[in-house]
Length: 295
Image 1 (tube, helix red, strand yellow):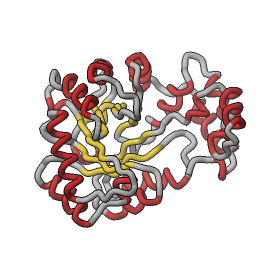
Image 2 (cartoon, rainbow, N blue to C red; image 1 turned 120 degrees about the vertical axis):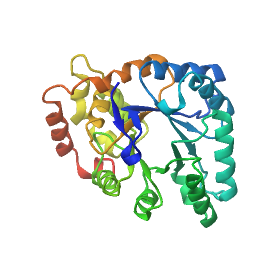
Image 3 (cartoon, helix red, strand yellow; image 1 turned 180 degrees about the horizontal axis):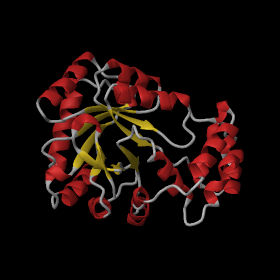
């Protein structure tokens, strides 16, 4: 595993970070512990835990207790529903519950997802500043892909950005990352594996047709067929290796629920893109119609 500075924070983070969220899987506490330990054994020291699932937080805590706190980068994500206000009480409760459940002592990063930011109140914004001032969270971040995220970046209220980034990312995403870098924000990339590109081309095209999908991934599958023809590489490994070449990103966040997947992907930062592949990717980007690229 390779390590990089997390922006100007001075903390070294693994090139891969692991997002821990339940998404209705209802996994037991022990499963989250095993998953976290597996990542740690592969050299991953950066984790983001989604608020709201006690068994998840407890499983992470069990795994983290064996590691010195200063060696871990722990982020806590507050998720909104786009309706309930993200006010001072909601933020205070989320932070205190998170610190209690994870035993972290403090969070290296407190992240709001885009729906939570959409309903952030003035009192909530002041509470974020108070949380940072009190050292309960060293940095405050925003995560998402929409126009509200651009607004958050230019507001100057956030220290960190989590943005999608992959080989099909278009001008808007690349501009957002560039703007955040110029503001000295710490930047994490996610969504490094476009699903349609990581499935064999015939399967991806059939699925797109079945659901009548249009847009970037469905239109660009053919142009990126070489991802499935590169010797000794899986398509998702190539996508990850490409994302890791973006110099503005401190790390790439992955989400995996099987230890063997984490182990396989954790080997990618130590590998170099095959000769000529970067040129193939750029040619595929050129051959993909502008309206078929991810914004």
